[in-house]
Image 1 (tube, rainbow, N blue to C red):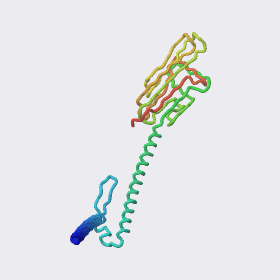
Image 2 (cartoon, helix red, strand yellow):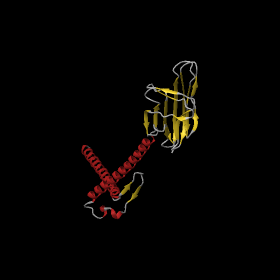
Image 3 (spheres, one colour):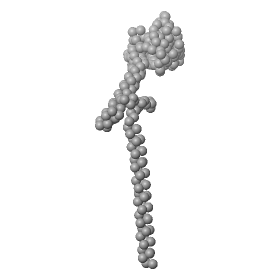
Image 4 (cartoon, one colour):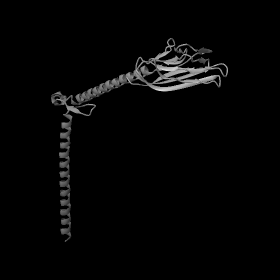
Length: 255
C-alpha cells in the first residue's frame, strides 16, 4: 500500500509539472503573437509621414519621399531630419504670424497717435481787455496750454479739425467792468464754419464781473473750422488767472 501511495504521488507531481509547462508555453506563444502585432503596427506607423498645419489639418506625404522605404540603414537619421524640418517650418510660420501681428499693432498705434487732437488756450497771460467793437471780430487766444496735433492757430484764432470724428468743445467768457453799476456784457459766439452753435453771455449791472460758459459735443468733419467770435458791444477781460478759455479735443474718430 505504501508503495502504491508513493507511486500515485509521483504521477500527480508529474501531471502538475506538465500542465504548468503547457501554460507557460501558451503564455509565451501569446506574448510572441502580441509582440509581432505591435511590431507590425509600429512599422506601419513609422512608414507613414504626415505633415501637420497650424489649423489642425494634415496631409499625407508621398510614400516615395519616405527614405525608410528605400534605405533602412539611414531610417532613424532620416526621420529625425524630417522632424527637424517640420519644426523649422512651424517656427517660420509662427514667426511670420508674429510679424504680421506686430505690423498690425504698429498700424493701430500709429492710427491712435494720428488721432490725438486736443487744444486748450486762454486769452492772454497778462492784463488784456478785448472790445467792445462796432462789428463782430474773431477772438485770438494767445496763451496755449496744449495743442496736440497743431489744430489750433494763434494767428487766426481758429481750430481746424485734422480728421472726422466726435469732438468736445468748451468755451468760457469773462469780463470785468472795473466798478459796480457800469454797463457790461460778457458774451461770445462759438462758431462752426461761420455758423453759431453756442452763445454764452451774461449782462449784469449788479456787480463788476460777469462770466458764462458753454460745453458741447459735436460731429466734425476733417477740415471743419471752429472759432470764437466777439459780437459788437461785447467785452472780455483777462490776466494771468486765465478766466477766458477755449478748449476742444477729439473723443473718437469716425473716418
